[in-house]
Amino acid sequence: MVNQGTLTAMGSPIVVIPQNFVMNTSAKLATSVVRLAILSVVSFFGLMQIASAADYYNCSNPTGCQLVSSINPKDDSTATQYPVVLVHGLTGFNTLFGVLDYFNGIPQALMEGGSDVYVTKTSAIHDAEFRGEQLLQQVQTITAVTGKQKVNLIGHSLGGIDIRYVAAVAPEHVASVTAVASPEQGSKMADWVLNLITEGSARAGYPEGEYNLLGRALISSHKFFGRFIDFGSGINLKQLQQQDALKAATGLTTDYMTNYYNRKYPAAMPSEYCGQPPKEFVVNGIPYYSFSGVGTITNGLDPTDYLLALTSRTFDKGDANDGLVSACSSRLGYVIRDDYKMNHLDSTNQFIGLVAWGEVDPVSVYRSQVNRLKNQGL
Image 1 (spheres, rainbow, N blue to C red):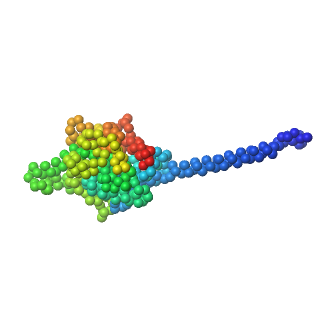
Image 2: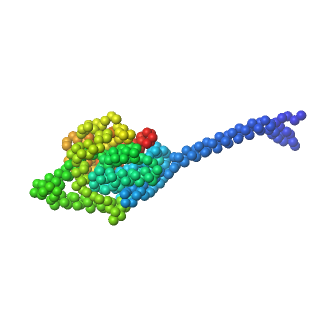
Image 3: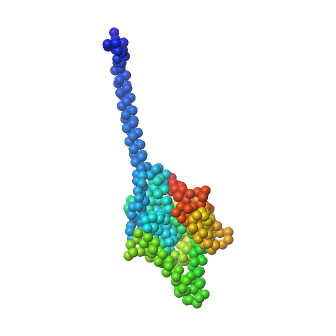
């Protein structure tokens, strides 16, 4: 009788595997293969979901939306349901001459977390309602292109006032509003500029609506500057956007914002200057957020810091500001913070990333906010 499991032939042992062992092992192996296949498929589609290309577009009314770059995200930390739309401020642009992004490094950082990012371009120098209409057209283009009904609006400076307009007139297209260093109750700097033009001309004997040499020079130079920025943003010379320096300055004054704009578009606004916004920051189904900084010379190597140190002198003593916008004026909806160590340009990671040493990175603040929107299903 042969001992089950071994067979001797020519003095060498040969392993004999029992039939039931073979069947059991084959079944287990088949089960393992199936499980491995299922896990592979699940992992593949999971990775595909994370690795699905994140896109960065520049938009304007004359050009539509044009793809700037596309990457495979590192994770899904900022993969919002709705596209992220970044809106520039006064004298702003999307990408200047293909080199300098207004939101320096921010679209790229958001893309790494899975965001689709659209940077808009409205008139560099005009008021919020005029620019808001331009922005609304671009939002409608973005929703049509993406198939998404809504967008997450993030606006810097005057852009944070423009986005309030869009949320008010077309709430069906807005998932959220985030204002960054925005003069929601006007800017003392704008008060000073308008007084320089109007009161200076009046003192010189000019009738209302007419301006002295300095006033005319300021108005015409800003008009030229606005068109130059349009051209630098890739807009054809025959399609340059309308500019109006006087309306831009007037539309940013504390009087205009308090007595006109905020009465017409009051959503999520404080009832008084330096007051806190209402605790209920979701209005008409739209959550409102804001963040801003204070300080001017935050990095001694940044030449623009010294200019902001001069403009900050137009503010009252004790009115903490970033050189152009006070902390009190920046509050809208849920205030994330209004005291980051950031001046007005730092809040878009400018000038070329020369921001405060040892402080929170502005780019990380945007990532955190978009992650918040993602976690809320927006």
